[in-house]
Amino acid sequence: MKEKEYRGVSTLKKQNDCNKLCSSFQKEVRYSLVRHQSILDVLSKFQETNARTNRAIIKAVTSCGCIQIHAEKQKIPEDISFSELKEYLDDHLEGQLCQNCQDIIEDELGKVMFYTSALCELLNLDFREILNKELNRIKTLGIYNLR
Ligand SMILES: [Zn+2]
Image (tube, rainbow, N blue to C red; front, side, top):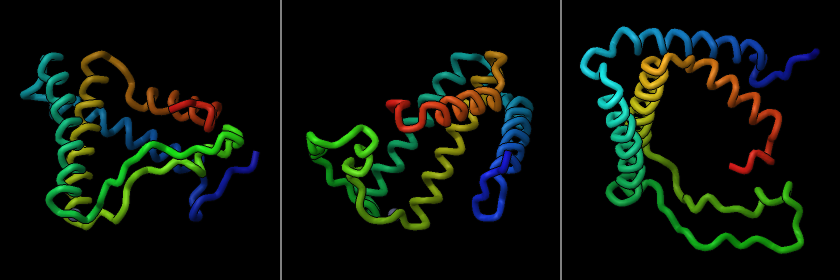
């Protein structure tokens, strides 16, 4: 089977690199989980980091102004197929994140990943395996995954 090439890096190599990264990430999270050993602390920190990510994106709009949100009801023609739907859906975003806002949002998303991995650790779940299952589901269903 011929591997797909993307920017000179094979998909399989990228998947292997990602698997290694996920495994070492969860391992590091395991060792650094000192203050939040209780599932209750991890659950509340997980929710807090999600809220802080939302807050960082909102501040990019309301304080910095590097991005704007212009939302309205999606205008979808009645005579299109499901596979054409994506072409007509708007993300309601305009502008581009400035470096400062990008850094803040990336930092918050990193914390979301930390507590996602921490949840996996406490529940004896494999972060890498969850990503692989989801990847396979997305690959199988494609645009029909309905998310
Ligand atoms: Zn900004």
